[in-house]
Amino acid sequence: MDMSEVEFRAEEEMVTIIPNFSLSKLYLISGEIGPFVPSLPTTVPLWVALTLRQTQKCTIVAPDWLNLEVLAAKKQEECSTSEFTKMPHQNYCELTQLLTSAQQLPAADEVKTLVKDIWDNRMAKLRSSAVGFVNGAWTSAKVNELTLMEANTIQPLLCATLDDVQKLSKVVTFSHVASSTFISFL
Image (cartoon, rainbow, N blue to C red; front, side, top):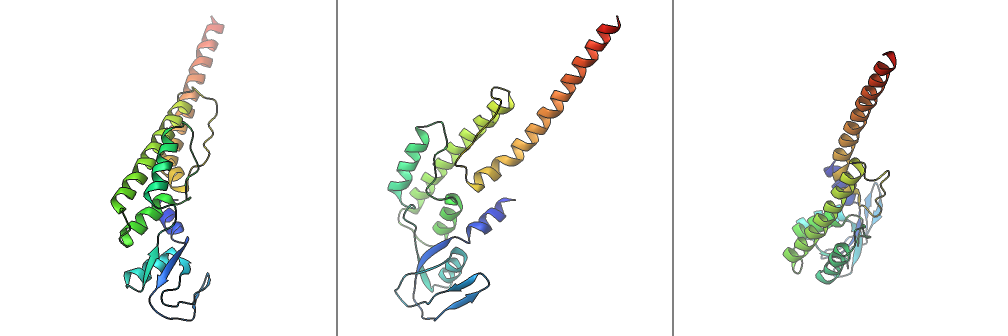
């Protein structure tokens, strides 16, 4: 799965909008949404909210976790431990990107900066975990609380590295067996 597929899946998240139009219901393959009544909150998939926002038919209500206080606390929690912490939302990066680009959120630049800081911290932890595992410092690795985007980011590197380690271990094993065999013939 590549990054665009992860973002596509994130667009299925349900968000609240405040419509400025009337419509009884919208019938989609995934189910019904609506009714849409001006000024009354309605829950819709993010992709619908983004489409409606683009045509200026609604305002998207930012999720509770997408504010400076919550994200600053999450950044502090993430920085204070060597383990991965539970994120406020499974698609926190994708939703932040989509929602901050779709409309003016309060303190959007600061929110983006906090999310980027959290992401960078988590990627550093992920890289150090991968390096420790590949270097043989650990016999196993356990990474809890990774989001799909984070797992997708490290997967190509980790898979390629583990393949290289496996190839190298076969070469080392073969050369060890070959030298042992050679010595036994003498």
